[in-house]
Length: 89
Image (cartoon, rainbow, N blue to C red; front, top):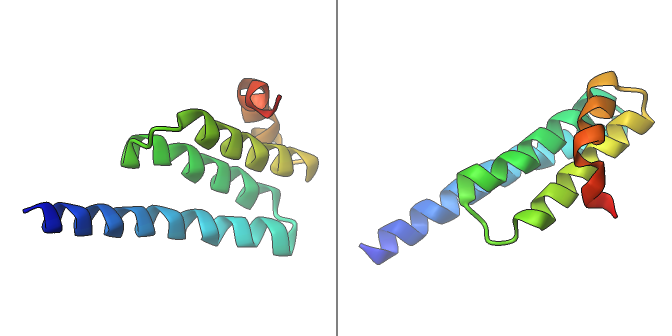
């Protein structure tokens, strides 16, 4: 039973991480502000999906994505950055 639980956790984490990687690639390589925003949303969603212990680190990572999107003039990213900006300090 422990093995099955561990395997399910690994599969869930890979699925979540893959979604972040997809958007982060679009953000960095194509300077796509909306992709940065979506990467931030997916990063933040990891808190609920994985229940990681270091939630502050996840929020900081999400804030970095929102900042990248805002730097690319993506309005929704700038709005999220107003909330998450405190995690960049």
